[in-house]
Length: 262
Length: 266
Ligand code: HEM
Image (tube, rainbow over all chains, first blue to last red; front, side, top):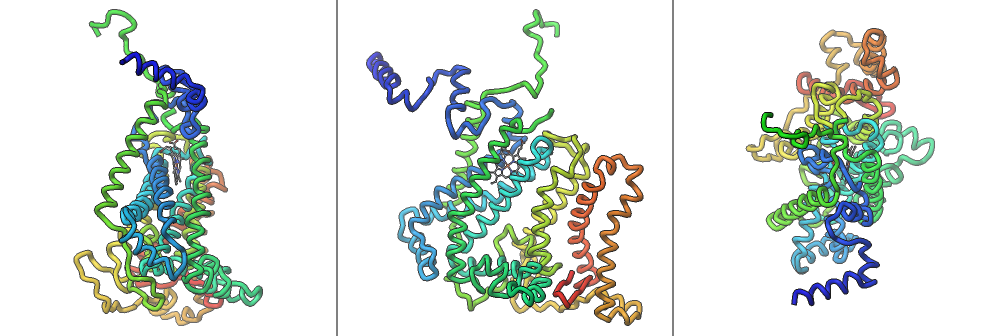
């Protein structure tokens, strides 16, 4: 019996199909440990070896990794939510209700999306705090810190654009408060410093065409805003953020792995 | 020591630079466990607590207070002390740019890759002040302590939407005119020049301090004038917030500078 199983195993593992997928054996050898990382496109963002120091949770708090983890959770749950949600003012709110009450696991999917987004914001703040406290932005990691700041900004924007989508009172008023700020942009916002002068000269920086209407696609937070935020939230910002994350991880590796005592 | 019989038993001195381990399994294992725990935590959180869904959006019914999402409440809190062009646009932009230039203005080579307070006191103190006080603490104030009319409510107080707080805020030039009897300060042009002069004097600290100290201070020489200028500008701009807060709490100052012609007040 045991021999039979081993035979079958042998046949599978030696088959050309298996070998085309898995390039190396699983025996625990140093060579395989390295190949495990080097021949896997996802794991390959890691170096194949790292300083033992880089493993200590007291050092990294795993905060960067968890930021990425929560990002992945929002991507997966977000795609599920997109199946049931229409970014149209007449439907959006009802779609949320429908999702919560009629779709199996709809409520918990929405909760996971929402709380993972909050967790991502918290973790990215902690991660930045950790990186500062360990001085990890110092040479040669200066540029990765800059990429990180961009990621922080995108994380906040990602959360903020998503906030509007349920189209309830909480959404539109939070977004109204937020986007009202843009109205005060110097020279570019209708109520900002120098706006009158700019408007007189150029015809922009009026309530209809200013920094705020660029965000809200109109003079108020309305149906066009919903569509604009939806596209930003589901397509534009996630793609840019994902690209920057790839750069970020790659640079961690290329800058010599996790920082540590020299 | 007496037990050591041959060289192989002498413990090796471990150099953290060359002491390496394989990513698979050592790192991947930790990542996997962290991810699993985080997922379990998130799942429990999502089963216990539902995401909010209020009444349908209604542009005619403004809730009081209207709060931004929690991570922006620090900025919303700044609105109490500065006009929106500062609180909502200029300061956030400077925060982002200021964060990005940190690696280029901090030339202290020490404290790279380990936690230390002693070797980089100025950097750590500043960052902690900005992060923990001006960001995290203001968020906590915004989330828990602000109610209708953006008035201050202790957690045990009921939110009374009819609470009226007397607006006794006064512009700096008027306050000074009252104090000194110099009525010229009430003139908007004089007041504008005076206010801009004050702000100018505040930032003039930068070159003056450089002139006074750069010859003797090794730190300033290492920084050089450009890095020093950027660092000092960002530092003074950050400190403008607590300064304005204290002026508001103690003297009820509203504006320091007023340029009504271009709608710019500080
Ligand atoms: C979406 C946001 C972000 C993700 C997913 C992310 C992810 C990561 C990960 C997984 C690491 C490896 C080490 C660790 O886990 O601590 C890392 C390192 C690093 N991150 Fe981030 N990060 C993000 C945002 C930021 C921000 C906001 C900053 C700083 C402003 C930053 C600066 C850095 C630096 C300098 C390193 C190298 C640290 C070292 O070598 O010790 N990252 N990041």
